[in-house]
View 1: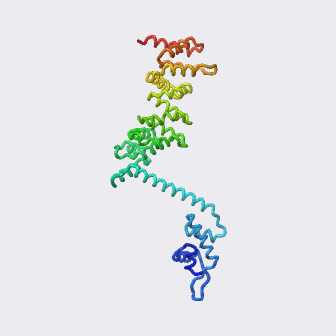
View 2 (view 1 turned 60 degrees about the vertical axis):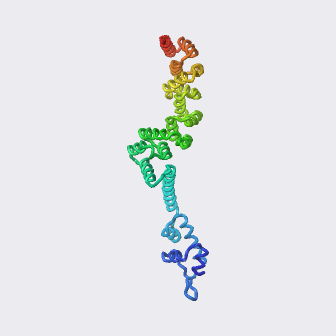
Length: 333
């Protein structure tokens, strides 16, 4: 079989076949009567083997070693190929992300492109100070998607605060990405996402926080409840009461319950929820004391009646707490 026919059958150019010959990868031993190279079936099969190995990313030198060394073991080489391929995919993914961020910023000219590139580079800097300055850059230089992505991955608390501020400054533009962050497989990313939402004074952000009350991650639920309490959303009551019981930011949760009781006119409902937590023989004394302290901030007759009953409670710390609260209430004008 002459070189032209081999090239057509193997899908390899004549020039490349000659290059293979020059490297010693293929050595057609036959010649026609006119002196032309003649390839055997074994030569053609070897060419197919060469192309198969090249398709995996092997260099021609590695291909020759794989085909000619009887003791060659592919494991190390394949492992190295996997490592290099993953690194290349990561590089390409970073480039794709950068291009998408530039496109999202809707640059009007190359100056805008360069400004956005500078922002992206700064947000990826290993120096916390530079990342923080980038987050605090003027609004016109901000690509919201890049800020949200940075906020979800930022470990430094000062930089994270600046990024949350920057995301909030952009209004609702970052909400879709933050909603995705709430469903991230990594707990720290979910927590960063909900903390960003807390700082966005937007109805759509409030809606996402309300949905987060049913989240599987207790940290997300509690953070959302505190924010919703401050926003006057009564659906947060159950989670806030549970936070008092569990001693999880219980002071902040009690303050949020007190604010809800005043702002939403649901004092009796909140008092009833706190009283419900007090009942039962298995409720530990510290839990009952915290619930009694939370009742102190709840106005209305229902809370006052509960405190009066608790003033005679056999648990002395609970009784003293209730008595003290009632004394303060009596002094109120």
